[in-house]
Amino acid sequence: MTLVPAARAALVTLAIAGTTLLGAQIAQADGEAGTGTAGTGVTAPQTTATPTATTDTNPWD
Image (cartoon, rainbow, N blue to C red; front, side, top):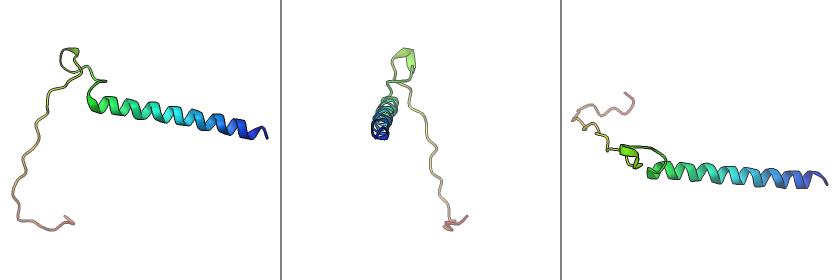
């Protein structure tokens, strides 16, 4: 019967660690974790490549 409290403690520890990790990922995705421009947490938008027209329609290439 000593395994039940140990298993419960392990489950609670994993739940807290998972919640903390998820919260950190959400904060980073929102831009709160980075220093960004002048320490505001906001980073400048990055440019993206423009798509080019192609006639090759083979999905396996």
